[in-house]
Image (spheres, rainbow, N blue to C red):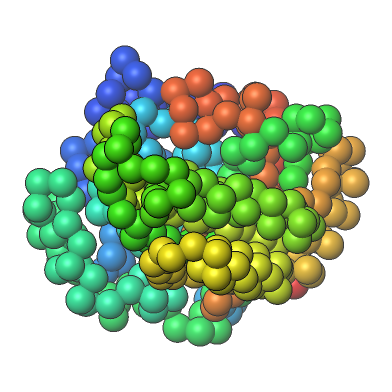
Length: 407
Ligand SMILES: [Zn+2]
């Protein structure tokens, strides 16, 4: 029932609203490109017979009534902002999938019990304001007025000011959806990893969105002349940092169970070839589907720090900068999707999402699930990001049938 030509046209058109046409897709929130994409999406929603409006954050909705107008809604959709020099599918694939589902319903006069809303979100990547998943945070009440004034883009424009310049009066009370008003939230997304392709699967049914623990480590040693300071009389912060960085890698492997640990950012000071590093700061990023694993990595890491402190006279400080717990998707909806995938003859697998998505916020107020479609070579956030349209079509068919079968 899915018309792939419409889907392809949507994806190609949306990728033309782009600040870097020669180098991937760049569409940041509350920009000219956001406005152009939004106009196109609004037009598509109207053409599908939907009632269209924006909430007090900037979420764009298109609604189709069900048999019971007072029943909670099934919400489907995704984001249409991108990273800088990103691809044409991240986010957009899920939004276009949702649009296509409702176009099919309109075309075939399919009636549903629940009302259905397509949501188009514009601030998931959070590139412009250094935040992220803002639209869904607004919907579930995890954003406050203070943030609108606090976060700034590179030009010093606050989120509130950017929204006002864009023509939206921020009204977070209006954006918050009451608990019980959303029956289910379903988001299709590109996998952004190689697992489906490696396993020759069409569809990924997400069981858990992994949790994330991030901490900053500061090591204060003593800088000194690289030539005149004897080896046994040094407090080399980078040598200590190296031990700790290796320990992150080792501990994550020891904890296992899919746990990953990464040191991706480091500052060395004074960072000169002939000076002993006196000060080092680095980040630690730990992810797992289980909270207990995340905690174990942290505890083991603290032990490692204690061990080093016993041997060396050096100051090590650790501060937590971000914690997002793992979020489980709806077992019931996964089961439904599994049956549908079997019936349609699609090769599927259950898997986890190593990246965060708006779905993890929506899960706070609604039964939530995600459908992954394969990413060619596991690539995303890259100009060469690609998903075969036939694969995307299968994902849309699963979504369409799930919406029809939800009870
Ligand atoms: Zn995305």
